[in-house]
Each structure stands twice: as C-alpha cells, then as structure tokens.
Length: 264
Image (cartoon, rainbow, N blue to C red):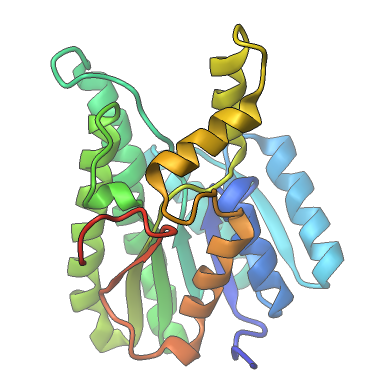
C-alpha cells in the first residue's frame, strides 16, 4: 500500500532511541524527511545520519530539551531553517516516574508537566503555522495505556499522560478545520532500552536474569504474554500519519497487547 507520505517532513521528539527511532525509520522507509530531536547531541546526530543514509532521505538531528521553552524554540527554528516547517509532528519524548503523591516535590510535578504536556502545547503553537501553509498536517501524541489505567507506582506519569490525552482531543477539534489531524496512540508494554536497563538493575543481586523478569512483567500485565517491539508500535504511528487514515480525528488508539482491562 502506498501511504502517500513521500517528501513529507516529520519532527519526532525523543527520536534517537526506542519508539521514536523506530517511528523515524518507518517514516523514512516511506520517503519522509526527518527532524530528530533528543537531548544527547552525539546520539541524535549519529542516528539522523544513519537513517538518512539507509533510506536515502534528508534527516537532521537537533539537540534540545523539549521540556523547556528554549528547547522547543530550537526545534521549531531547525525545522523552519532546514525544511520550511513540517507536515508531521510526533510528540514522543517522555519517561516514566516513580514516587508517591504525598512525598513527590512540586519540582518533579512541574518537570513532568513540562515534558509531557507543555512540550506538546508549545510545539503545536510553533509548527502548526507551517502546517497551515502546507495545506494540512498530522500531529500524533505518544500517550500510554496509563492515560486511563494507572500504574500504582507512577502517579505523576499517570496524571500528566492523562492530561496529554485531553489536550490531544481538544487540539484535534480546534485544528481539523485546517486539515490538521490530531490523534493519540497509547502503547502498553514496549521493549525499550529503559525497560531493559531497569530490569537489569532490579535483577543485579538476584542472578541477573533480566529477561525472566521482563517475561514475568508481561505475563502479569499483557494477555499477549510479551512486550511489543518498538517497530510494532511504530507501524501504527506510520499508518496514522498517512492520508489513508484521513477520517481519524481526535481518537485514542490502544496498542497494548490487551493490557487495557476495560472497553474504551
């Protein structure tokens, strides 16, 4: 199927590893040019060059912390300078948390709010004008099954991801008149480097069988009994960027191996 994406420009935050990088490769395979964004300059520039060479597209790596105003401004400026704007925005940057509500400091709440919510708000304000000039666009938010089904140990993550979901729905209603489609994709368990790192830490003094630990997590939470690969989730992102998904507006899609326990 031709996804009709060739020569489009996509900005992907958190684009140097995990789901973000898998989405970048999936879009590049369709001929999409890329602005990859991450905090680690060497890694994001290296990955941008590798993807550009592999798929014969244009790609740049931008060092930026999108939890800050300056970081968002750097991303918008790079997209405008290199490509004259963007057709696609993938708000993927984010990370899990670990705290209790009673003990978490204001600063931690504020950081996650800026990372998960305000980054999406500011990037929309910065990139939507160029989408309008191009005749439309797509904005996808990487949410989480935790937008509606919280995990007990990360209340800040749960709350800010839920807020992102509502922002996405509201933004969708505001922008569809400009032919800009906004949707949220909510993954469940995805085998990213963060999960592997955590599993290795948790099993370091128990024999080091991190794979068995992750297998146990999957059996507990996902009826499919395994983690998704980043590529499995990326396939869904790529399709949702396509005009083939033209009637999808303001929706939330769960790509979670059955982890969600209610009808949504």
